[in-house]
Length: 270
Image (cartoon, rainbow, N blue to C red; front, side):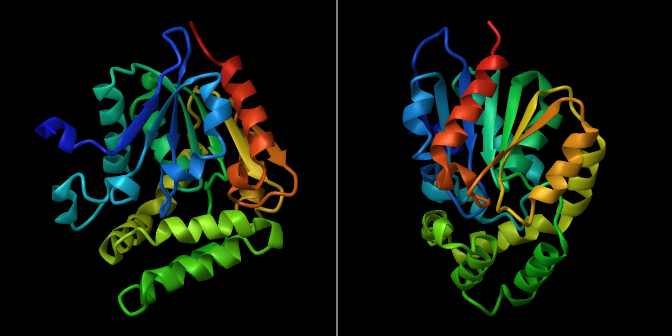
């Protein structure tokens, strides 16, 4: 592996053909590209696919040793990692699909490189923290040095995904988080310290990029704020998936796939 490759996120491509659009799948904090296992078959029939593991996650945990020595991450840096992978594969433009905190990374990419983004699908989008989620983040920051991070993840998973039918996505959430290192968890907790002004800026400034918000009807922490946002933005639409929680691509994959694929195909160019 050469020097350039070592500095790339772990990534995997599925190439269907030159005439098909590229779709980039971006997981959330504590996850990995494994979160998309229920999308791959349907997406591979329609698109070229790029999967990435964000820095410190999945198979990217050890590929860039310089990250280990950084005291802080920023959303700009993490988003640039994804663009570097696109550059490596000479992908000029793509549709981006994200889940949970991955939607913020996609939105940062849209801000920095709007010419690279055909459309954005925001699954379980986080655009505002309500009182409960702000309290949970505050608690995590207070106890992060004293409590094993996986305990925090387990508690958060139960609060975010409380119902029996959320069990698969909840278990996946925790299982993938176990692959993180404690230090990596601390870095991602720190990245949230500046997230509120970022989200406020994104709520106030709309990009001229088509956006689909795909939310579970039981995503009680984040759905209300998305409903409010879509009423104000001209280039955004909301589709609510029934019997689904925050990780709607796992809870109701058939509906997630059908709606997102249709949206991406509508906004594919050339």
